[in-house]
Length: 67
Image (tube, rainbow, N blue to C red; front, side, top):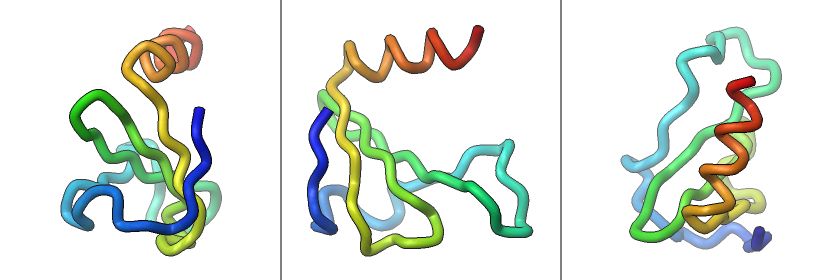
C-alpha cells in the first residue's frame, strides 16, 4: 500500500462511492480504478491523502471484506 498526497492520480470522473454509502455523511470512501491499481480516498476530503493498492492487494482486501 502506498500513501500519496493529494495528487490528481486519476480523473475526478473516475471516482465512485459505494452503493452502501448514504447521502447523510458519515464514513464514506470513494474508489477509482486505474491500470494496475485501485485508489481509495475519503469522500468528504477529496483533496486529502489517497491510498493506492496494486491488483493483488486490492483483491485480497475485497475477498476479506466480503466474508
